[in-house]
Length: 232
Image 1 (cartoon, rainbow, N blue to C red):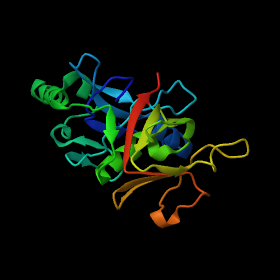
Image 2: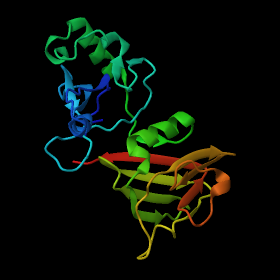
Image 3: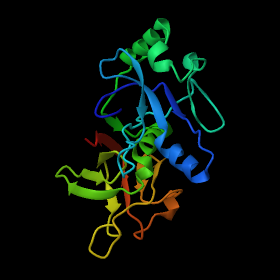
Image 4: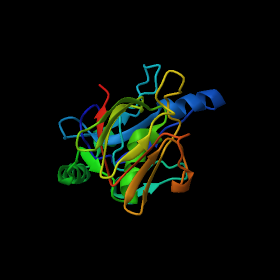
């Protein structure tokens, strides 16, 4: 997903030519790009992951599905779908063979994006962690207990987007550690677990159900659903 458009991602690369360590670091951030279809779905383009002219690292692309089993990756985690792996990246935008471009267009056409995602499996958890960046720098901007017993949250601060979250079915939670004048509202990381028919969501990495107490911000429910709202 990028700039409120949906495209299958066909590759992820970062070209580094600098020899100075600091310049390598900068290029490692600003030279990242993803291979996606343009807005008209007629051409494969390199979309910069971050806006080079911005002082903030606000991603222009949100990865809503983390599965890349059909990709060929190098030791640094860069690469692309296997059928594009032999194409020169320097010319891929302008000289991609028609049959490969049509394959990209067909794959993208057949993919149906569902804007509201429910957490049912470990794959669903991995996708949420991918698009949210693990909720690093996130904070609860809004929360609301609904008459039917469900709970609504709006997270802001996540890189490149806001995320709405709903819990329903035997909902319990504690937010006291993150809400209030004397609390730090910003999350450093998060954990989502599925255990004994419940989904657990906590404001710390690597947690287990046994770790939960009111020193943490946590949520428990039979169902958890989310919706990603890309930044403008």
